[in-house]
Image (cartoon, rainbow, N blue to C red):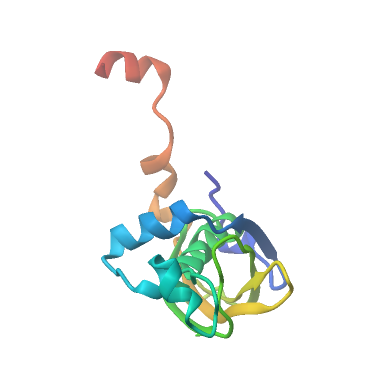
Amino acid sequence: MQFKAIEDISVGDTEKWTRTITETDVVVYAGLIGDRGPLHLDEEFAKSTRFGKRVSYGMLSAGYIGATLAQLLGVRSAYVSQNLRFTAPVLLGDTITVTTAVTSIDTKRSRIWVDTTVTRNDGIVALEGEAELFIFRIEDGLEERFTEPSEERSLIES
């Protein structure tokens, strides 16, 4: 777990994360959100569309942005807002790269703005947007809440 202070973050800092979208990802996501759309789950239906194959959920790709932001900014960060524009489909089997890049910092308000992009393995941008995040200050005491218990303490509690 990374604990970064806002002073540890600079404009231009970037993080990339790559993942191949699998059948399991799409089916589990469908179960979690309750969307049973045939474009995502029915191969025969999807073949009849302009995409020709099943399409992953756009918000599944968007969800990976949060994981990438945690790596970029540490666990002191919390979403304030995220705008998204879906520009191309992500198909099952596509490998995506999530790229996040810090574009602006307001230390007085403890806010950071980050460009967010999801690019398919063929180089086509599938999703783009901007995130605004709040960075908790050191005095908020998050380290104390998330540190691992000492061995001695965990033996006493078990």
